[in-house]
Length: 286
Length: 268
Image (tube, rainbow over all chains, first blue to last red; front, side, top):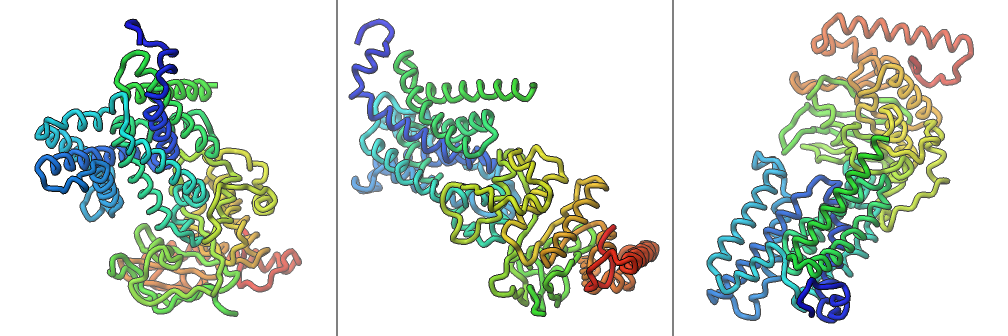
């Protein structure tokens, strides 16, 4: 590599080194971009933020348990902790909130703060793995672990076809749940599938690309697509495509300008959303 | 004639706590049934229990085997953020258990008759939330009709409409009900809807713990109704009912109506 600013040619020359993290970012963006349409339409954008923080806490606690020798080495797998805590948090958020005399937004705020503060507090006690905890919260460095690469690509490869298969039912259930129930659609099972897939996707991708990028990809591409298009069918194509582009493009920007990867991916998604909002505002003025 | 829906010793409520006294009521084929009551009277709870959306406290709701039910929720149930076209919304009416898999496919041939019957075919490419309240209700009615239901449940379908749009919508519902011999069960705050259209009226009141059912004349002349709404209101409704019946007799005399199955009028 030259001593000046990195170039696109250098990036392409070193493609073998960057291939896995770029593909991981793109697959995460693709999957979360698709799921994000349902997250935004159901007005639960903070679900993915709270889940990614819960996953981060799960990872931190797995590290801590490993350091303290509370778990056998074979079970001290951070991804397992992420999955356990993300699914546990999802089950908590799906509960009827009325019995707590709280709104769902309130519970999500509680979950987010519990996960974020817990991850920082636990990270403070495991200085050797502080870098790993920081990577989960703010995005990883240049490389991804092989297990994260395969988990992210595999999750996208399994969940996206299943979602396409259930698309009609999920759209109807999201738009008009009561009518869907009257028409005897399996609403509870469809909702369970949606929430389970969000929990699994967030858990695995948080460990691979970091909580910030996960939140960004599960909200911003869908918002961008909704601002640009009045057709749900197009939104469901545009949003994952934008997620994919931001996942790869953000990585490239991070390389070219020596930025942290997670922040670059998030900023690129924010820029797309900002442009889409301007376009929508101009269109509406006309 | 066998009832489409049979409420047997039905007690409705939430969390095992009864909200209304025991209800015994049948929904017959082709009937126009109005559910009336004040805010918080338990109308929606009864409605949702009969639809199977909430479990009964006790008793049972028996649907005719294979009964085709359509439901039109209140307009507030729909979030304006969804970028759905009229065609997409109406197509949802065709989804059913086991038939919900795959990417949405819209076949105009399947939705065209329903949209044409409510005079909304020209709206098919428009975004649902860009429509007026009256147009939205027509589209939702088309979504209900697309599966050829035997009974349609409508939760305040004329709320937020102006008077003209309300009258047009109610006349449309009544006309299509007669054409298709479809039963309609409608929750409505407007009591005059019951005087003009309903063959069966169902008055519920949670605070006084009463349920009265019968024809509009029977319900509006009952002491319970006068107690809840006042004698003056009861008298006004009875006068309105007499006008409607008189109009119908006149129309029948002139040979302008072909429907002799109903005991009072159908058009405002």
